[in-house]
Image 1 (spheres, rainbow, N blue to C red):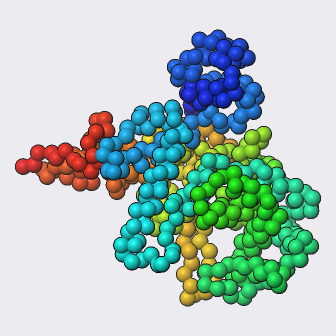
Image 2: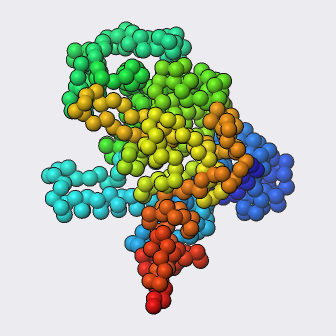
Image 3: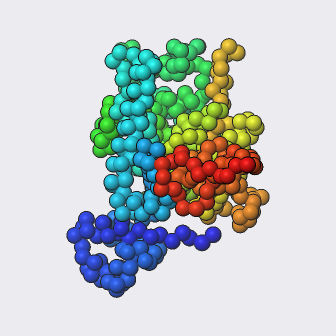
Length: 490
């Protein structure tokens, strides 16, 4: 697979202007002609690998600074949002890409306003149906979406927490074979908090509770050992890294207290994963084991989901792992968690593509499924999926059925055990998936549940396909979304 050309002229120009460097001075520093640099900034020439390395060293940039992964996701969300009938006209992919390229900050502000509008609309509907209780109105933004977007903007990697977890694990000589006992001892020695396993659920839906007044962390006795270990590590993160977590949240400038509280939970969870699976030792084990999730589970005493999520966070600048996307959904298709260190695009509205193997996992519980899948923009992924349902602890309780998905671009797939037996070069063997029906550009998919945004429909009565309309493959319409051009009926 050929490397993707990177056109990031506007981003390079803004970086140069930010540092007060002229085009001529930067061209001289890079040992290229001013005309060549001008062509790069005008997106007439791509940025070569050699120039990327020089720019990264000169400006101290992250390796993915000029990658278009975030731009692709932002453009996809812009198309979804701007194609709301509220705005009257659809936005083409080229238009969305151009807007993001030229004005990413303005794009983010537009999306911020649109999410606020959706939140207020939700609040209005709740009030109209008398569901909202007095004094419990909705926030100006959806807190979960805001925190998820913030975590995604960090590529699900928080280096300061990773390094703090590594230092603590090294200083206390935490070892995988004794990590549960080590964490219990540290919590007792450092904070005088003991562990007590409750024989039943603490309260309806509760799995742990920290009571500082009696110095006790109560854990649900029904949970498996890896979950209890993770909860202890989470509490250690809340106590040990309180100042660091608060500083990260302040820098995020989240819009309300609910979002800040959710971000605190997310960061404590991140620290817990980093403490149970310290970065360098986990990455080295992952490489040695060819990213075999089940072997990594046994090595670190973690769950399948915990290992998958940890694999999606390995983006340290000096020693990155494979860039993975991570997804967690329930049996109804609701997305519970998602993040991506790849260019993989998740639809903001509606469920994931039904052809994705993460849905099929529910029909084969406990089995790891492997799929070669191609997205509309031409990128092929190796996708791994499995259910991670846990016992509810009682016959009368209902277990929560969920599945996780993990995937990487096919260029990295050969490093994993999951590529064994898969012809990574056979493009025809890949399932054609998309980000979700509303955002998917495929016009001939027989599994489509909803029309794509921005495309006029051709509806007739003399013939019928799998779906009751045809999608006009010409340029997106300039009339309000939802209006269709009726075909002549007989």
